Length: 171
Image (cartoon, rainbow, N blue to C red; front, side, top):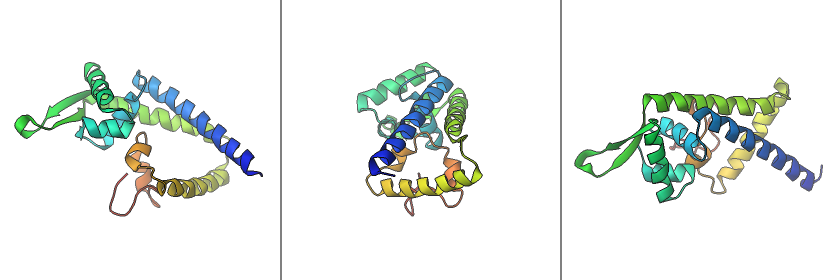
């Protein structure tokens, strides 16, 4: 198979997965943009700063503030002022945690629908290949906090672990 055809096939599958995941996760949280990723990220990183959340979901500083404002307004997160009134962190509300759970399930189902065409042997082979590709991109500046913003963190805690994770860090 030629390199051009392989690139096209990878591109088609990547875009199909992105489109399905975006549609499913936006529906699960009843919001577009970075809201779904913000909720899942906060579930894995409770007490994140607005700046840390902004970086993880890929929005600028003022965009992060507006995102948090919108999520507070929807009752999905709350701001927590730290000791001395200086540091402000963001935490999920109970409804925010339930919504984050729905987002993760919707993501899993959307990706699962793409994998339905593979038998068990094909799935195992693809898992090995994707593990190698993920390890390859991690050496090229992919940051786990950004790449894993919608991940089910428990899935990558199982052996062999997250291929983005370096020893002593967590994804």
